[in-house]
Image (cartoon, rainbow, N blue to C red; front, side, top):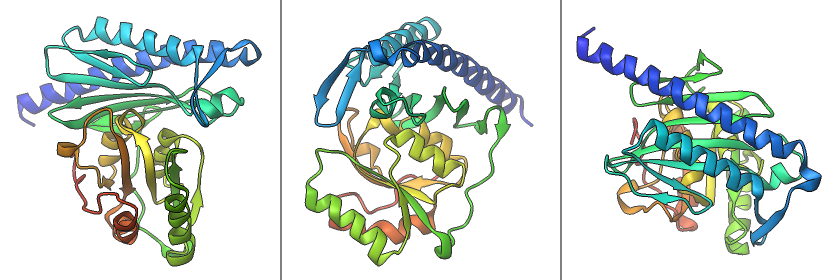
Length: 281
């Protein structure tokens, strides 16, 4: 192995360890609120779109810790954080992805920390505190689950095919119905809606589903998961060259065989049907 390669791998491991530590500490902040939900103020950002004191506290914690560790980088967060750095790198964070699940006492919520560089997601850490799941990975950093290397995505088996779905309340009813009709009637896939894009993409990484189709997710929902999944053979249809960090997304993610199946659906509902996420794109 070349010295430069060894150095890059060593730096990657150090980066992963540091950001995992930040994510775990942020998880403790979130859990302190989760354990006292009856006293937690909840506000509406929109229909079925909630924000809590916990979201803001975790985002503030993450911003402070990330800037301490990476003072030249920027930070872009769901709850309004937008700090410009000088390095060209941006940490895109979702303090609690799955806030609706969080406020109802559910397990399916997670902290998502993704690194965005050269208009691409390049590294991510996801921590789901209640389920004690820590995933990390990206460019030159192997994907791990709780410290153990993860296997490549399994081949698509149409006899037991399954997809996760994310349908934001802002999406038109006819478009949401078309997604359900196409998945269940034309593809005859099973589907899951767990209320968190991050957890849905974890299910893809763990082989529990074959892919994920989304209408209306935000960049902070996927910025950590996509590079984690890329190491496992996943691709996606987001064209980052034409996507800003504050845009809503319409995309699919999974194996190439999965994307071939859902491409006609994306064409019908206004998503990008072209595979653009090979390797670490």
